[in-house]
Image 1 (tube, rainbow, N blue to C red):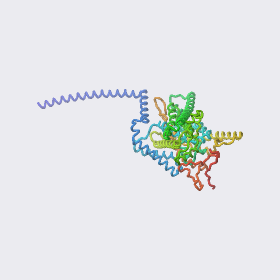
Image 2: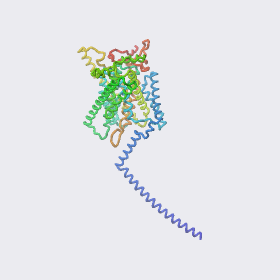
Image 3: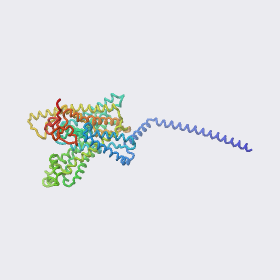
Image 4: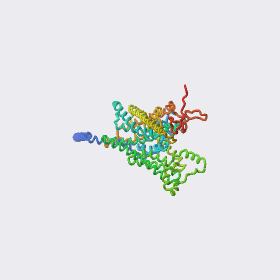
Length: 610
């Protein structure tokens, strides 16, 4: 009986298992069919053109967000990152000091900062979570304004005025000419090599031409001053003056061309006319805003003369210097152009132009406890003669600053500008080989050739007109028998040696790098920006490194071979080839032509006879 019962139970369990297996098979078939239907529906959705566009948009947004946006504000200001930033800056300062102390003429200080950045970037590759990147807008909004303002403040205004014609010609016409020549070379060169490199569209090529035509004033000033040149030397004034005004023109042109980076924009005659009007309005308006701010600052310092401590004077000086920059930047104009105009006006009317008298006064006051005698306060004169007081605001050559404030403004502006310049060059080296750059040997070669070729065409072409103007001016003076004056000069002749030095000293640097960082990345929804920003960044970096390392490194040797390098004599009158480089001492040693700035012939290196 037990055996029969056991057999019956086993049969029932077998029937149940068969039923369960059949049900499972049925459910599996239904599930497979549901999955197949779902897959077909998903495939239909994914292959739909609208869905493809949506997913492309989402991918683009995510890439831009992860590339440019911060996901953790606390991480950006972490102690580790701040420590690394300060460490890199300290290493740059050490390298710059060693370059100057050991008189390494073939290595510019900017090149030393780039090397430090490259080395630091290589070390950071072993620590992937320590990324020192920051917002690209910091370059133009925070780091560039002190550099431009210091350059506008430090250039000698009398020397600048004597050479205003060639400086304006090189800065305005030269920048426009170099931009279009560079664009043609880059566009046509990349199109010819389409099989080996990505072609650069003409709008992107024009944008690159505008930003790479900007000459770096601080890098140029560093190279020339280390050679012993001063603002009394003709070649120094021409190069420094061109680089100063050239930056403003290049930035306005760049910002105008950036608006054309829009695939929905139709470029026709009307668009070109509107762009030309925009360029003119931005340039003139920015100059007026900067000059107006400088005049208002002059009135302010006249009213508060004697009421402020030197510390507050220096503080307010920089506040007035930065106000017009951010006003123009906020309304869509050029803050750089306004900063240049503000620097000129504030240096002329607030700092003052009686440099020789002020320097002797500063030395006397520094060596004695009794403060130097000051002129009567214009505030007192205002109560006696209002007309005289108003006129005296802008006619006082001693300026409206105290002696102590005047002594420290130049030092503070130079320190801030050098810090920003050092940071930009270090950043350039730090991320030179990162994923933010798309390196191509042919792109770099085309960019370097276009950069050098455009300036090589521009300098001789415009120098011809400068020499013609000088010749006509001297002829008119001889016919009219105008006596020579110490404050004027009948032009300057740009010979072939000076033209070659002008071409050789066209260093690119912080400004070009700041502009390329501000190029908008392509947005597939709005159609604005360019997808070739990584290529443009690599091309710009290649030009900067070539001009800084090669052209900047060989500037002294080129000028020495042409007999134009300055010399410094020791106590016995023996020429010291490298003495002028040490400690950056400024000597009035070089005049690039018989018509030097001070009207005298300068000493040149005498090459020994064979």
